[in-house]
Length: 392
Image 1 (cartoon, one colour):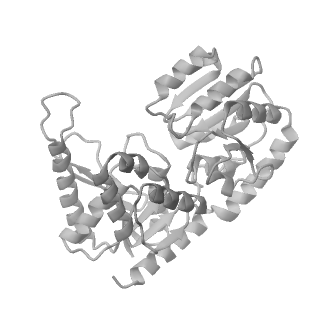
Image 2 (cartoon, rainbow, N blue to C red):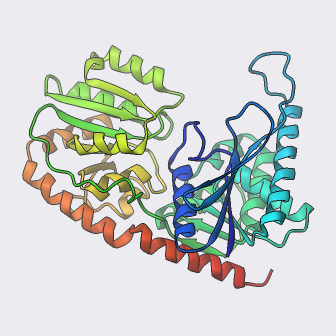
Image 3 (spheres, rainbow, N blue to C red):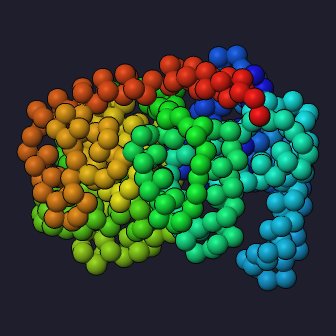
């Protein structure tokens, strides 16, 4: 197969990324390793316009740097500038698809997928499109903009396959679609996630004997979804307990979270690490006592699977779809997503080392049986082959 993976932002760039970008690169390189021809198209960090091609871990990566539209005011982004940039992107994408004779395009964002579908139609390229559905980002834009709602609806009806990363996310997706008054009638659906990066996360968690008791959360810093503020508030409720909170990631609410920690007088025990590479993330995980994910909703948090893969005990908010694969007291802990419940759960974990060590081994066994990337990449290949075998 000739597979093209496309995302304007990606793990190949220096910009901040999330789990979706990490997974797409991982999928691309795993597919290349099992013998598929894989091309990855992404934006570029270069200031000069042009196209750069580089071979990385068996994947041919195209970096597109569009010609910049002149801006008279620093920081302004006009609609014309955006249209000009997207036009160049579509032109380059069309040329690459034809040159590489790509049969299938794998994407994850609705906006990028919309551009791929436009290229397919405009240049009459017989390529199949599979979108990886890992979250519900579309709901904010669609709720505020009827044009965006119509485009998003088109995307999900026109792609050749929607690949949800968990059953819980699939249910939440269609509930959100109904809430927005959208109609998605595409029946070409699968549920599969690649898993964790076993090239990096190979360590084995051992209960750290030396205090303090360290909590860690790896996620984008936002109040709307990830809710790190609940953990900071829970830390303050623990009083003088020898507990630290380590937040890995960055985002629009970092300053608000720092201010909250200072206001609650726990700033000296709250550490903001920003975006760091995966090797450093693993080091922090191995030296922590508890992984916390205080999200309001989640598709399948990549950082949770990574933590579970090395056996770091996980406490997650009792929400979809986290509660579809974390069994409370067996392969992790679930807690209502409020400050008091988080403080209570953390306090209980502080005093039960034996239970944490039991949870640790159960997590490792669970991840190995469900999220082994070397097994899952073969399932991806089967799905892509099936999509290609279907008639238009």
